[in-house]
Image (tube, rainbow, N blue to C red; front, side, top):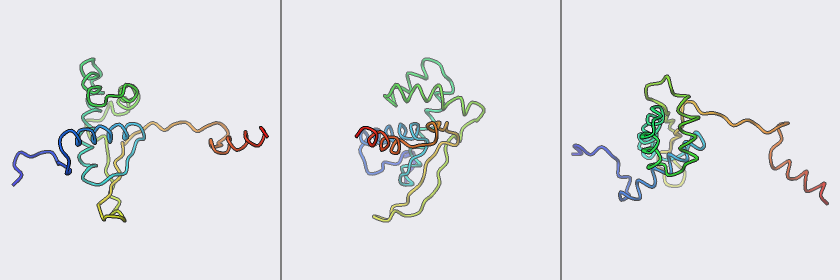
Amino acid sequence: MRHKNKIKKLGRDAEHRRALMRNQVISLFTHGRIRTTLQKAKETRRYAEKMITLAKKGDLHSRRMALSFLTDRKITGKLFHVIAPLFADRNGGYTRIIRLGPRKGDGAEEALLELLEFPREEKEESGKSKKEKGKKEKKTGQ
């Protein structure tokens, strides 16, 4: 029986598991959604929601606690100034897990972990992508 065993070990030792969770949470805050296995998504959700709750407090101690886990000043700043204000009126439940079915290679259950509210980046002017602009510049340069 698994009494008092709250965390999933995910087949990794403690250091590897902590690094995995850190990377997953940073990717989630960077992109707004990540595609991973169901068990990793469930475990990552715990850490992501803790970070958002710390960011909602907004005091210096909370910022230092978040920075000790995330270790990236840019992402921590984005968390405190952009992401946390979106959830100011919500008491938990900041993420959603959508099951995607089994992975083709090994049959692992995949899931999409996403923030409920995420600021979308503004599109570039005139709707052209970077590729199209790069091609145009190369043609005119010849």
